[in-house]
Length: 134
Image (cartoon, rainbow, N blue to C red; front, side, top):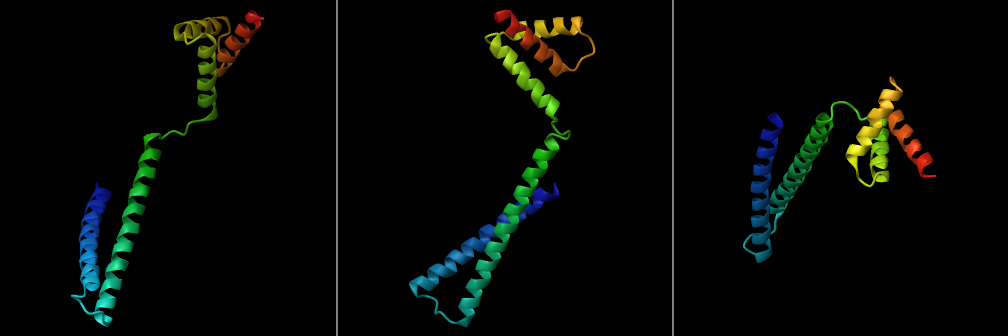
């Protein structure tokens, strides 16, 4: 909630600063404002404020996005889960997309060889399919 307030206020100030900067620069270009030390420092300060707010606002957004994507998956995905899904996808591909048949073969392997890791069953079924196709 606090970061949303920072983003909202920062966006508003960024918008106002951008409008002021655009107005001052247009008046300088059109010749309605004389270019002196005061207008130079005023324009420079508007540019610095705009740049700083832009940087801080997008730094906050990037930090919030990386934090939300990290907190969306609190447990790190380990290699076993990745290899298991890869092996399962390979098995399903070998069975021409028949997910039910892949699940049945894995369940049969679990009954025949209890207590093994999930990826082992997928490897076993893949090996059995390869052997049967030869």
